[in-house]
Image (cartoon, rainbow, N blue to C red; front, side, top):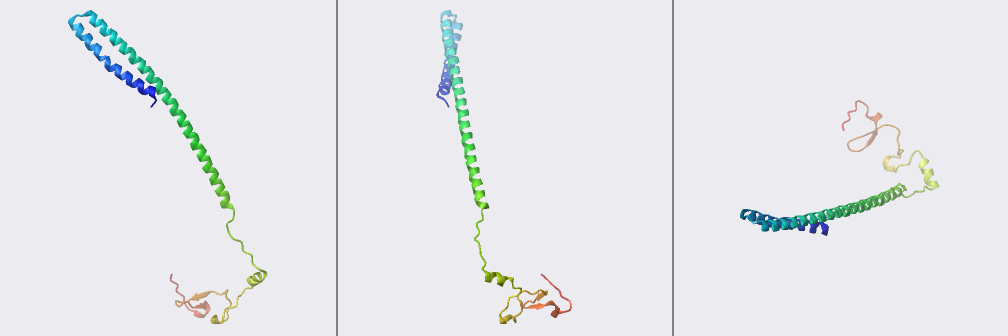
Length: 161
């Protein structure tokens, strides 16, 4: 709160409360019929009322200054937020560009490896009876894990999963 606003509000409140005293004196003097006291009381009352108006004007000026300062502060805060948002967006764009670059290692296959890959079958160790590793015939795997060609099984085949 601006100092002018505080001073204006407290001054107006104090003078408004002081305004009650001359009115009480005026009422008392009216009951007694004392015109001189009534005039002095009304002069005091008008002085206090004038001071109330002055302080009220000062409070209004202070409130206007407060609102201007608040608007400036809000504008600065908004500008900072926009600038921060732009920086974050730039960082995200940089990260996106970095993410599009491949992060994988490269692998180079030698000529012997290429020749080996072109072979259709690979010799199996003697454990499996020197059968080709990739068979084009359908295969059945039993509960024990042994692979047998479907032609050997014959009959009806029930499959459960």
